[in-house]
Length: 211
Image (tube, rainbow, N blue to C red):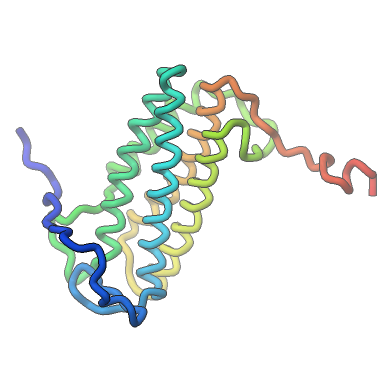
């Protein structure tokens, strides 16, 4: 068996609260105390939020997979992405000088896999004639929530990279993931037999009234 590329976690959570953050600071992986509203915290905090909403979408996906077995493929992908986001958070919570060679992180291989999965699912989908509104079905809407949180995480990461430092593959990963979530939202609707809701500018009140 080949050696695993990343070290296994070495943590022991015996007590959740420590009171050390009551003054608005927290510790990075290297022990440095930093403000909780700093750019690095904003970046990996939004990645954590993204992981949470992905968990909601994955739970919905697996519930629907009982009736639509092919959705289990998407459920497995979302679970893997959750692991990748935790790896991403690990590297963001560590200053570059403290990163270990075998510390968990996202890599170009993770980006390439997202591209493969997008291409595979996109082949089944009809071409778009307009922008899509979230909400063709519940899973579609949840994946769009994930997509928009992912875009915010990407913006926070760009801010971090400009003000401090962030590995370039982290930005690439979130950029590609947000695209993937768009494709997966469409594929989920397609699998569920739910029609997509296309943007129609004249469905607005002003468009209907001719104002």
